[in-house]
Image: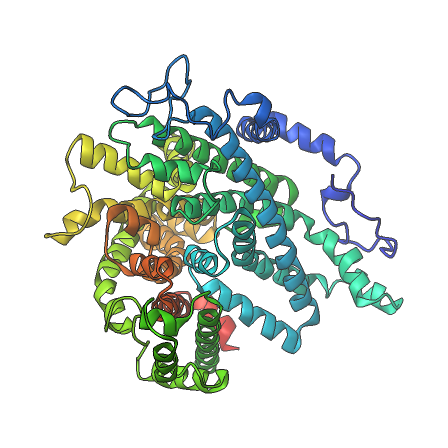
Length: 309
Length: 312
């Protein structure tokens, strides 16, 4: 997955090895550390399982998630509790909770991964340019970052959704547009110190262009930070998507989303607590898994970040 | 030193100005015709045009921006389109006490759970308490607040009728316990981890060794040196949390039925009440910017090392 270009202008200058990411035995070391860390193994396994469930949802899910069943409501019109027919019960619209949960994993992962990728791309570009260029470019970009950062992130997303209208695509764009600032700040800080290193000076002396220096000589060093932030960013994006859907302005109905399931369940939770517990537990486990995987990657890739937050 | 504070202050003013401008641009992007909204759905085109003139909407963008800034300087945030005849500023001021109460409560929960948990866990690493605190922190960091809030309402308010179901009443503190707890859980989890890590680092440093060698009692070392040291980063981050919370915590206010700034913002977004959206979003951002300025300045007073660095 991560194949870094050789640094052809490296000259073997001390301290220019990006990280262990580029080393040939990286995967073996990663696997070894995973085997020694039960918590990390469990969280990575859970993420793999979640991806499989999301990708193969149509084959795994027992029913169609939007189908309303004639036997999905009790005689008095209340949701049916967990049982042999509906494993996790039904919701107030007589739909199967388990099937909606499985399809909800699709939405969460899709929004989480796409929004985070976009946010990371923006963050890296802004941060790298600001750090590398310095001067007025840096001031303008970083003050812009400060401005976006000063809006509370959820309120900012809600306000943007009000402008763009709720749809899955807009949810992804809005989260990406609100979240890039965190990575931009970190990347800028790292580029500030990286650009003073000898291998950058060496490349400059040889007449390598700025864009190529950023791409080939600086970016590889940023990969550990980007990977760690992206993993933690997926957890944040999933929570943001759930919050937006909970407020009724996220993924449009009747598509299943965990946040929307919790929001709908809250009206019936006194009589049908499973409507709240099932999507809530799914959300907690997913966010937890990405957070723990992020911690593990931090330790694995970049010992320096361990001292920070 | 004072030169640094002045530079930082000017930078804050610049960001506030940027935030205000962003909010103004934002108001233009909202897909609603303000004059039509004020005039009502049955109004004739002539009436709409006359209201557009009254609101100054027929003037150039620059002239509108200029008068927008002029009104802001006088604390005038405009008049709500939806709530007839109410000014945005008065509505925000009415909602603010609830949000402030909630925000302060949230920070208090963060402190009274997060710091002791972190200190105890650091003093007894790998103990039962440490493992329990780790597990609790992981849960606190990963549980969506809206889900946690609903669970608390279900068990503590509905099932066991300990707390009021929702809304606000008298005494207010009674209605704020659950919402502020929900608000504080994430931060408490985060701080307990942070305090634990910092204390473990401090405990290994030479000046603690020195204090022990000169025979200082463990309790004095703990309070006079270790905790004080570990609290420096926490205090500044608590300030940021307060700024963030004051901007309105819309989900927690919405599930607990608290008529605060967050609810006001969310309601105005649902009804496309443009001046109210601009006002609430702007106020939230300004709280953050100002708090981060205060925190930065306070940092230099709390931590002498920072003061020395910035003084140069």
